[in-house]
Length: 74
Image (tube, rainbow, N blue to C red; front, side, top):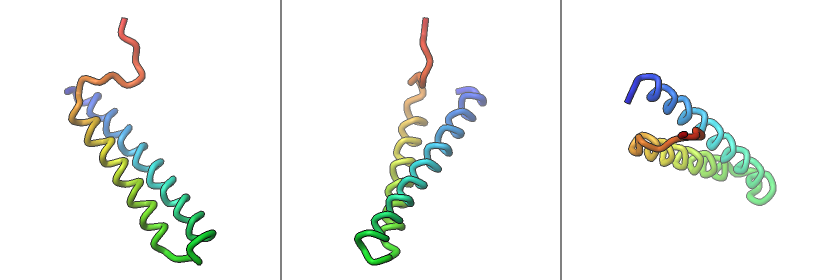
């Protein structure tokens, strides 16, 4: 695996983690404010779920080196 490909994978993983953690946190805020009387555990639960999904996606991405992401092979 070349260094540029490894860099692209890390960039994709970090971007995916930011999006998933942010989405989990946002959903935690919504559920905390609407259903759970402003408790903090929905925020932690949503952020943790986002982090877990991002970790799983990154792990799969690094262990499957021959997948092509958004490229056409002619």
